[in-house]
Length: 464
Image 1: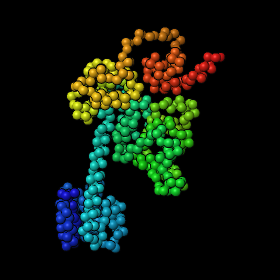
Image 2: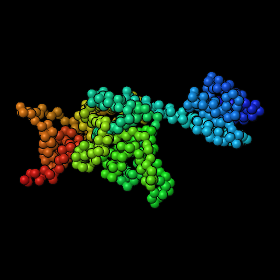
Image 3: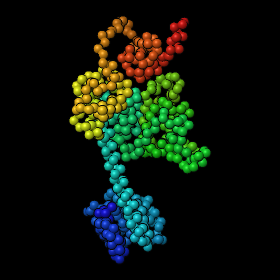
Image 4: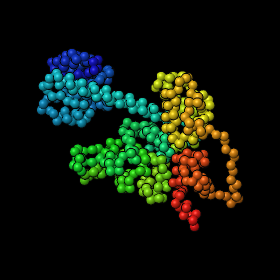
């Protein structure tokens, strides 16, 4: 903390000289003023880390000085000096933005302790603001990787809705970057200075999820030894990201609906609801509308969440972005592991283009990580690729056409029939059927759920 500048304002000359000596002795640079007016002039003309001011001064008292200093710089750190009998005034000063107060008479150890705490807090605040600035820059929509039409459309929508407070539902396969997109929305919104809280609804045991979401009061149940702040309360003023919202238990779906409708949460064991101001971004890798049709997800909650729907395309649907993403991850990991200069052989991208990336961007990132770590030379070649990518390097399929009659066709029925044929052909083995259709197993499962295809229902229809 040495070298920090402190502005000391007090009309008592002897006290001012003692305080100045004690602060200089520790290593601080001290500016002094004998009045509030003079102190305000010095504050405006100099870089000051901390203001220490007496409350009782003629012309401009410490309270008025505090208000003017905070008006000039809301981040200014102020400690007020007060007589023992004027503590209520000091408390009012803290309400107006002072960091702390010291009462006369005080010893130099108390002074040093409070000054040190105040300057440490100033550093923490500045560091947090710097880190938030980096986050905002990192999650700028301009920095999002991809030039394909599919992903640019997504970024165009999200850059617009980021400025609003509307609920957003992000759908897409696992690994497509749903959480990354949610962070980009938050850090480009007016709430960027406030918390971004992540809740994985599928990772927390059902019996613990309610207390994780809404918190509880001390004594609400056995083992509740103290109050617990829930995720919604922690996200107050900011954004809560509810990942895998489709896994939410029906009973909690009812409570979630109330939160979205009234912006109130019921802490376990508390008789009074608590108001919160939270933006909700939900995400799922399942077809939520299909779950609604199957009575597995509440329709009213679905429409509350689905105000702004965003669907992230799978990586195989934006293959022109694969070289951009692969090179981005290559730069990231070569810098991390000190292998700058490592590059891809051009045939690697051909192999990438033929692969179907069931794990999407996450799978690509993990693969590049592994390739950088294990590569012995200065070029990553096809021979370095794992077997699962190489076995898909097969010749292009012959052109396959379906004649379209004059009266037209039902495209969804055709898709459903093709999926059924593939499943029957491979004895209902989903992995093999997906390969036959040249799609990922995740995509096949999504389509099976979408059309409500089951072996049992098909067998019963066949028997008739």
